[in-house]
Length: 502
Image (cartoon, rainbow, N blue to C red):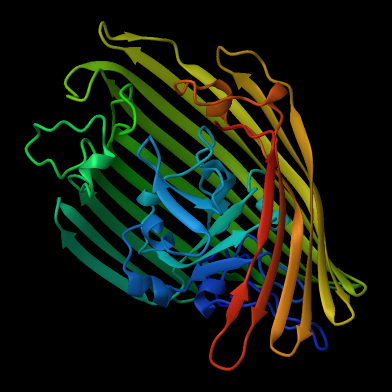
């Protein structure tokens, strides 16, 4: 492992598909090497992972995306769209947007109040590779990763600079580089993106809230964006201990295009949107009497704030109300893997607590209500076992997820909720050049604070007694690799019980 490993120093640059030991099944299909860095659930010898697609750093450079949202477009089984709040969100296999978690160097980026993050504001220039894990993902991902995971890793080597300009005020400036500092490695990245409006491809698709009298009818109403981001990471080694510390900050302001399919839409602007996330990670190999082991830990702190301005109509001239949000999240994860006879055991414990402070201001007469405070705590623990079965490989997982809401603002108190999680994945080699991976299990998602206590024009319909969503998932990935090409077939099945979103 090199000292400059930016991906939390939690794992070496190993393939997403685990490499087999002598005499075991052939490896699962792999991606270009740089995309294989995945730090939240590292690929390890003997481990069987669910289906994965991704992009290497070279592929990202060829695409020249402005944001992570642009980079994900076109990947098999992944869709990217803008929701009614103007946020760009990813959906894996058609799942709900809150069922797909986004991780940056091993730490979740989702804003806990809403259970998601705007990937359109995450600059692509600092990303060295990305992987999208589908199905019943690894135990390390914890609660709420029920349908898929977008695992982002920041740049580990080299540098890149991009300057783009286009119609409708489109601007994209991005630069990133890795600088060696003796025994340390420093990564710096900066990006700025802006646009005055989103172009309209077909006006007939906007039956509402697109005035015909505006100067340029080809511009989507109230869809401007201006965002700047900075990233810095520093890592190195102290003896056998690898460490990495990093911080990402994004400041943005934007309009939220009103819904085009209804007359009673929200007319919002967000003049202030800011997210800062700091994290530190450690990896320490150990030599125990029974064999080698590895301890990994990551801790993160996230600050998020935004102001939402609500107007009375599509003229955006009369302010109706303002909403001020202030979020503070603290979390961590610890994993410990070790040999146990022919098997490898991997223990994982993760948790985070989030505070959301909300102040509503009515205009007129500019009356500020008392701030409401909400808190949610998530915790997950479990164990996975990798074991050989003749020429095959098997990975089994078992865990427990728990959520509590000790502060509920002015809303009724909520009881703690918990649910078990389990999974199994089997890798086989039926014939030369052919590999088959069967996987399945159950994952859980707890209602976000906004779903529990927010108001969204009646669009959230809580399930009975606010039990967590339970997603049942199954995959069968068959790959054939004759010389010169690879053919992969991946039928899948998923069912969600107790769906929370409408």
